[in-house]
Amino acid sequence: MEIEQIEILDFLKRHSPFRELPADLLEQVACSIDIGYFKAGSEILRFNEPLHAFHLIRSGAVETFRRNGELYNRLSEGGFFAEQGLLRGGKVRFPASALEDTLIYLIPDRMFLQLFDESEFFADYVEVGYRERRKSSKAREQASADLLGATVSTLLGRVPISIGSHASVRQAAQLMSEQNVSALLILHHGDETAPDGTLAGIITDKDMRARLIAPGLDSEIPVTDIMSADPATIDHQRYIFEAMALMLRYNLHHLPVLMRGKTVGIIAISDIIRYESQNSLYVVSSIFRQQTVAELQSVVPDVHACFLRMVNEDANSQMIGSAMAAIGRSFKQRLLELAEAELGPAPVPYCFLALGSMARDEQLIFTDQDNALILDNRFDPALHGSYFEKLASFVCDGLAACGYTYCTGKVMATNPQWRQPLRVWQQYFKTWMEQATAERLLHSSIFFDIDGVWGQTQWAEQLQAQVSKQARHQPLFLASMARNALQRTPPLGFFKDFVMEQDGKQNNSLNIKRRGTAPFSDLIRIYALAVGSDANNSLNRLKDIIDAGVLPKGRGEDLRDAFEVIALTRIRHQAEVLRQGREPDNNVLPEQLSEFERKHLKEAFQVLSNAQSFLKFHFKA
Image 1 (cartoon, rainbow, N blue to C red):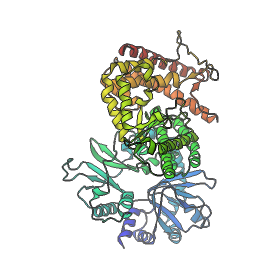
Image 2: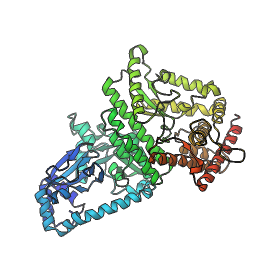
Image 3: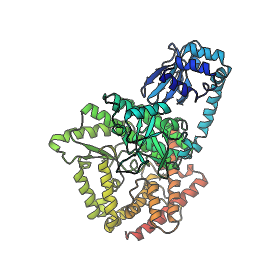
Image 4: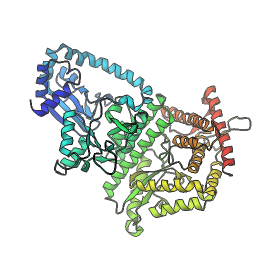
């Protein structure tokens, strides 16, 4: 057998129903296989077309569909499809597409039918077992709420395969082939910059194709020349949803897992796909496949479905907020790609910013857009102004088309005030902190929730570092921020009854954002600035605040629980409105809440009210 066929044989030996076959029959299968490669988003099988092979997934992820376009199944490494068509006339019954870059082993129809005739186990597994696995798949979907609470360690399988940073690309490729892996960890070896055995980078099949083969480089170059250096990592005790959010945010296909600083495994998108059907990873993948703004609009129903699924499965507010924020970032990133394709490359570097709830990973289904542009200090309005004006308009108009309404306060990159060189932004923040007044900060607090989503994102990090370093030493600034935060109070009357909105269209309702989650975010932000926290998310900020000991004992935990009650009330309200086919909003009608919900909501608002009183005292506001 040739080396490639030996590799195929080793793969078959690890997966049912092949590993149960006699050795001689298994070798026949390995020698008969052809290999197909399909790019992410490409069509693999089309309904009713002639079918000539049984499809076995070597790496990647595949979706199969019913003829009406409804999703039928989602498969990853070791999964197979097309057996139904081969057994019923040799025509495709379930169309298939590649969810990510995918390698497929194609077993000829004659070989498949021979296996079906000669191996009772193979026949039962494929024909009967498949139906049973579909049933268990649906059961897993019902249990996915539990899986959302599982830790990353539950996804780990084999020991990670690694190689030293001194190795060549050829050696790395040989090891990946021998071990049948699509990703390889690169560990420091003989480097002065880091201890031996620590993580230096990661290399994948995709890196081999894009960074070695496509440019025509010599395979004897150091593996460090084509690896992704200092990759994002996650601790084994973190939750699966956090790994998912990290992979969404940075469009990662592989994520190294650490235990006490040591790499103990790698998880891939396909690992998470096994746990999460109709997932936000799929939505993000779909966003990046769209070629026009109109096509991006067509993804909006999938976003709504993803939101409803997470609510139905009792995901907490942090899970939902981070997933929706990742989807929102993906819309921005794809729109910027399309804008640059239409307008040409940017004349000077820039960073596109997300502000507010998206930057905090607290975005929901009903939200406006808050964004800005940091431009390179070489920016010349006469030479470059027109380009960035068009870029901002393209993105903001595209976001509006996809359901992210224009900001009524015009905090958008289309506003020249928020489309400035880095030095101007640095001066903005310096002035806000050193020459603070409540009036000056009234419409600027949103800029203290900032996240770079495209381009020179390190500029956003520089601004965050500037704020983290300086804000805690500016008592007038903190007092002014606190004074503004106290303008939005919880909707409780003297006798602890709800105080309803009386603004015309939304009479006798509670604006759960304006009177609940927003003042909570404002309050937490101020304490976070005071303790020098560099976190963006409110709950992560609250952890830093609790650790700093600036609140009375137990008060931070009360704030955390109260925030969750109010946030989930808002989330469930938006989900219910969405189910009814109406436009989501933030206006909750108390009479539509149960007595239990009303009681806990009042208690949560009371915690907020008490916290605002302490805020006023603490910062002398």
